[in-house]
Amino acid sequence: MPSMDKKRIYLSPPHLDGAERELLLQAFDSNWITTLGPQVNEFEREICARTGVGYAAALSSGTAALHLALLMLGVGPGDEVVCSDLTFSASANAIAYLGAAPVFVDSERKSWNIDPELLAEELGEKARKGRLPKAAVIVDLYGQCADHDRIGETCRSFGVPVVEDAAEALGATYRGRPAGRFGVMGVYSFNGNKIITTSGGGMLVSDDEGLVRRAKFLATQARDPAPHYQHSEIGYNYRLSNLLAALGRGQLARLDAKVARRKEINGIYRRAFADLPGLEFLPAADFGAPNYWLTVVLITPALFGADREAVRLALEAANIEARPVWKPMHMQPVFRSCPRRGGAVSEDLFARGLCLPSGGGMSGEDIERIAAIIRGCCQGR
Image 1 (cartoon, rainbow, N blue to C red):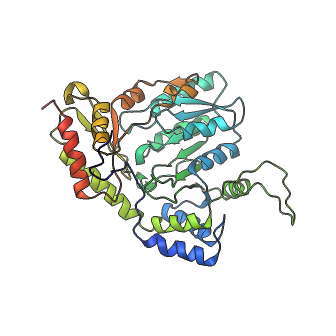
Image 2: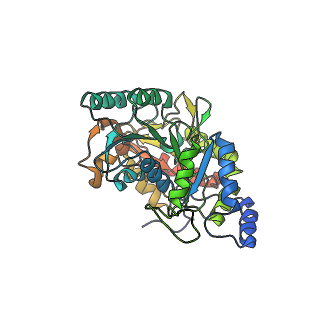
Image 3: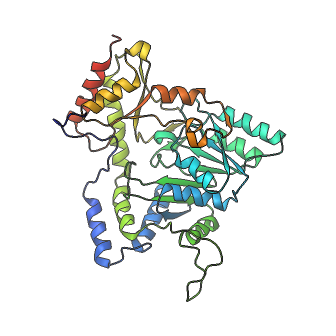
């Protein structure tokens, strides 16, 4: 059982600094608290200004954004969609919602994101068989962008549209360009554990105004322009509320500071563990700047003297939350029969990877407490 002697340290809790309160009160006082409203409009505008993308639709979740993006690309029953193997299940669930089959592609060591060479091999083989995937869902893992130039060039050469799953990566950049801009559409998540949060929520972005307009139509139950409620096609209840958009605006205004704090925390961990054998960090690829959403380490038991699970349990016993790296999609029972290319890298990252508490509100004492426990687990010195 976890020790209750000290406060619980969570993996990535919401971090509010007070600016959100004023905007929430504005929305409350306006009595416009349901879906849509001026706060939603401003949140969309501010996301566009922040990322340089042309258009945005504020939605109830990042998963909803993925679902709509794939729907608008015509994905349906019998289709295949390439998907990063090492990711949260939402990336693949959205494919399954439409009756399509995900095709999982393994990670590269450089960034832990989808391997561009394996992706090219997969699309080449599919092309020779005359059955190219309908789309590709490319994930920016743990706040670090995938190698989008190489991926985009490959996908364009085969005519496969990309949906960039930047759910974890708002504030990250790739070759100086913001995450979320490297596909036909991009997706952000504002879940409670993300670098900015609206409690629950997400955003679909694109430079194609028609796609975003279509997404907003579908997300508001596909209601036809009529004085009565008329529907000519199936729609969804996917729009973000005015209240939650106000929360998001307050958070977005502090995004740079939040990224800087997460980077600082990552640096503290790196210095604290610099002398420990068998412990290495998620590498920062040379093609971009991550947002350091989570600090993630790999633990090699033969060198460290304990495995990832032993370290996780030691932290849990001290009332500190840590999580294993995402379990690869090809290992998930629900997706076990889906086709894949590779898998050994993502399996290894899962077996040895541990996500450490990274919340922007952590104190120096909190980080020292975490570091001391992890250092105490090391028997390899």
